Image (cartoon, rainbow, N blue to C red):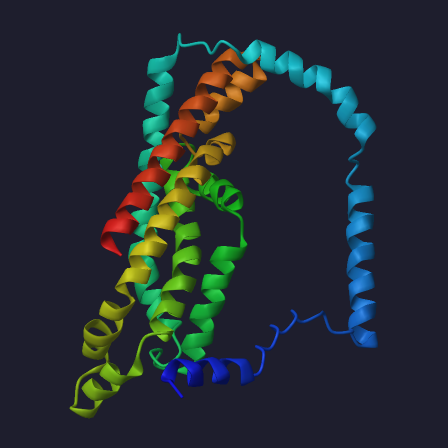
Length: 278
């Protein structure tokens, strides 16, 4: 019998392939989980009802939206120069606040990293401080610093700095905790200091994550700095508030378009840098 015949007989005798397993279904929740699901759904429905949203109100508001959009276009370019200067001030606030926030985030993140913090009390204190900075909205920080240092970009820069510490501090700490413990244990075994171990074994491993988080933080700060001017913290926000208060919607449209271009440029530049560096 030839080899081809043997192979043909073996293929006929082989068992048919098993069909793929069907996708798993959701498991039946236990009574407690079912009650929690129903309570969460009921809370969402109550929240929607109490929010005041309705199709009728949206239908009544459509003519007003159409009127405002009609007054926005074409954009008014008469104050393009002062608006561009305010926008540049906004971007400077974002860059300065982000840079200071990153600078202060690193030592605080080291203290908030499990395995790097010198004492559990220091660890929990640093974690709590980072959580506090991250929890309080940046507008509240802007109001606080406006009272502390007065109106202007200084208050906005400080607000962005504190917000950046809360954002970067958490992710910096998690990035350092996720690094390989082998190099740090080797340095410790040969008598290396804690500082040397951190800067020689931990930070170099976590540096790609640091860069990624820092660039995301700059994008976030650029968007936030636009709003901070509404409470007197400098930047383009005050220009937008004045334009809306005076019903000069064509000037407001110019401001919105320029803000959109700034945010778009920052996001594209950040994405390009992440693709080249990381």
